[in-house]
Amino acid sequence: MKIIAMIPARYSASRFPGKLMKDLGGKSIILRTYEAALNTNLFSEVYVVTDSEIIRENISNAGGNVIMSTKEHECGSDRIAEAVEDIQTDIVINVQGDEPFIDEISLSKLIDVFKEDIKNEVDLASLKVQITNKEDIENPNNVKVITDVNNLAIYFSRSVIPYHRDTNVDVKYYKHKGVYAFRKQALLDFYKTPMTPLETAEKIEAIRYQEIGKKIKMIETSVETVGIDTPEDLEKAKKYLNL
Image (cartoon, rainbow, N blue to C red):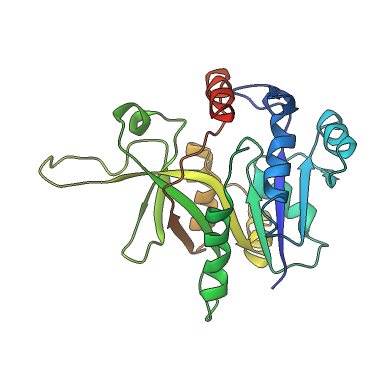
C-alpha cells in the first residue's frame, strides 16, 4: 500500500491573509508543517500543493517537493485531487498547511484504518478530539462532528452539534481536526462533483463527501495541537513551540 502526504497551501486565506508564510520560530508555518509530515517517516512522498510562487519558493529553497496548482480551487481536497490525478498511490493523507504540530501517532491511526479495512468499505478517515470548554464548543471556527456507533461521521457543522436540549443527558462534543486520509478514488470522485448545497452553506469540504455517499471513519485522538486560523492562534502556536 503506497501512502503519500499532500499539504494544500493557499496563500490568500480569507480569515488570515498570508498566514502560511508567517514566521513561527524562525521558519514559515507551511515549512514547519511540511517538515513535521516528513519527519513522521510514514509516507513514500510528501508534497506541498500551492497556487503561490512565494510558498513554492519557500519550500523549494528548503529542498521540499512542491506541485503548483494550474486551476483555481475552492478547497484543499480539490487542490490535492488535481495534483494527485497522475500520481500512482493508494492512500493520500491531506495534512492542513496551518497544522504545524500534527503528531505521528494520530497519522498512524488514520493509516491503520485502511490497513484494517479488508472489505474496502471506508472511503476516508479523519480525526476528532473531545472539547469541553463552552467557548470552544460555540466557536464557529471549530468544526464539530457527530458520529454513529461505528464512529462513521453523521454530520459536520460550525454550529453546536448536538443541540443539548435535555441537560440531564451526558453529551460529548468533538472538534474535527483538519487531517484527512483518502482512498485515491474517493478524492477523484469528490473532484468531479460540483460544490454541494450544505458544503457551500457551512464551508466544510467533508460534507461534500457525505452528500455524494462516501463513508468517513472518525478516529478519536487525545492530542490537541494548535491549528492557526487567526493572529491570536499564531501567538498560541509560538507559546506552544517553546514548551
